Length: 186
Image (cartoon, rainbow, N blue to C red; front, top):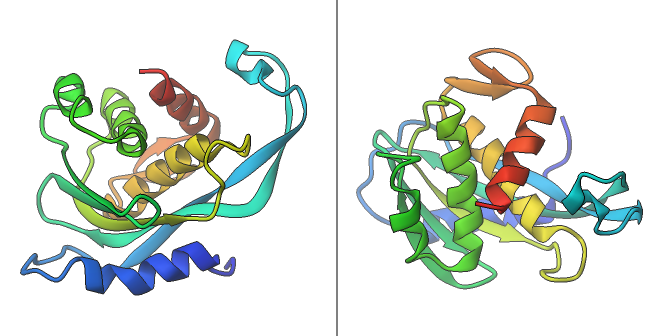
């Protein structure tokens, strides 16, 4: 089992302090994360379906949280010190109305959830703290990291209803990558 990266450990530590309310959770606390990346060759050609040679870096975006018994998603961003609520009911139809009231970082999360809903994935609500050490706006794909971490978190908190690779409603890793790429552009 891979070692838990520091941002995930910090988010796990922060979760009980951020979400101190009477929610009855559907599962144990857990964490999901995805790394940033650098392109060794092909910088910016990936936007046009060009060829790149990327490499994962040791910086990640992590979600730490717990599944809920409803379809509400509550998120706290350590980086931006912002709290948002998203509603899974009605996705993808409610995407635009929810998107307009969200900060930019949360739009990536909603975009991935919308694309998962379009793919027929049954999502569960969850509460999570998001923490990362991928520098924003530095060419290390912080937006891709939050998108893939979102997909990983949705899988973790879906209580076995879908997975990446095997079991449940299965999405293959390349499908998840394409889904996250679409989410960035909706």
